[in-house]
Image 1 (cartoon, rainbow, N blue to C red):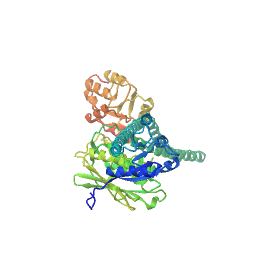
Image 2 (cartoon, helix red, strand yellow; image 1 turned 45 degrees about the vertical axis):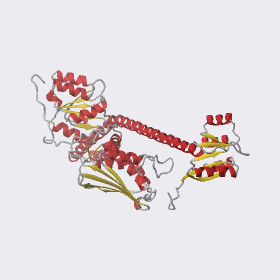
Image 3 (cartoon, rainbow, N blue to C red; image 1 turned 135 degrees about the vertical axis):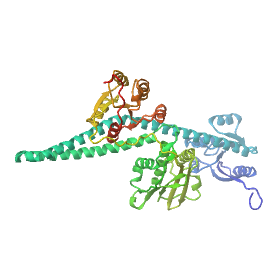
Image 4 (cartoon, rainbow, N blue to C red; image 1 turned 180 degrees about the vertical axis):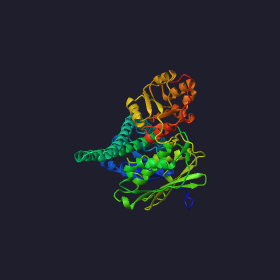
Length: 541
């Protein structure tokens, strides 16, 4: 109802393909009689139709035959542009056979000009059906994007896993060579006083070469560490779709997200970290990473390129009683007040066509709600936007990760007897070098490891890859627990990151330490040297 008590008519954007102004007026009158207020445009030619189709319309109402145009030609133009607009033919000359042919071609309805009483009802029906088709397309698009994201996640997980083993070899050998070069340099230095002038000059050249090689190895090791970080981030973001909630360090996930978004940020803004002393949150690490990455990328894309020092993306964390708040604030364009309430709606986007699907923040909203949290937005046009994620704190700090254990042994540690079960021979050889001077026996099959143990060979520590052909590390552990339960607790697992649901359940249940590939030499050595020796059964050698 209007202020004067007269019912207001719902607007209807109407494109009229009609050469007769009187006939057009009759159609408009019928629309108003049916409770619609037409916002219309009348066209008579193909050129006018083409220009009009650049605007949005709710319905096209077309005469069948015009002097220079026709309903079939107009409908073909709508189809060429992939527009799903109700198209209704209204004609005074159309015969039944022509009407049937038009309907078969896809026209939604036809009416005679002298029988317009059902025009509004036909339009309302077609608008409902068009809305239903649009909704089905949106759902299909969401499913396709979800499938694509799942495929990308699977691919990323596979790539990360395949990189891990060769990267473990590269990094392990670089660090082993660096250690050897340091020992060589110290040995050369100690020879100075024991040789003559000529040999001293040669020795100086050798020392210079050794120093250059040490620098080269250090640079290569730093580059390898960057690759290790990238692989770790890929693993975080490509975890399975299982919604497993566990204690998660928000600062670690934020840092991973920042590294993943680095290319979007680097030419637009400076990142300002304002991390508080906050507990872990109860969340799913991969899904939380997806939320942070999406919000950070949106923040970066709201800032034009070229003024890095003049713009910031500030990331702050703080406690809120039993919750933890994470705020991501940009100095971008901001969001208009009338738009802000809709940013978490499905398919709503402020980005240009082809740049945004309208799914990102909607999915973020769903993820955060599923983790018993909330996501909020504050913005001021021209001043930037703050996205706030609030999550419940974890009641326990227990995670699947195992901290580096300090060695109780003096330095250097007594030599340990280590059995490494690793199906990649190069990784096995690298482990041998990294654990020098410990005695490391490498086997590539879990069955051979079990046979050696059954034959009475003694090992202080067992390193075992998780995913192997024939017999997995999990199966090896189960059989070892049956045959030699005192040894099962001395297994340290090596993981390349290809977690299956079974592997995740296994690590939730089994408290054994785990070292992720690429192997961190300090962590591996600490675990090996910190493990107490197992009891020797009678007859073991």
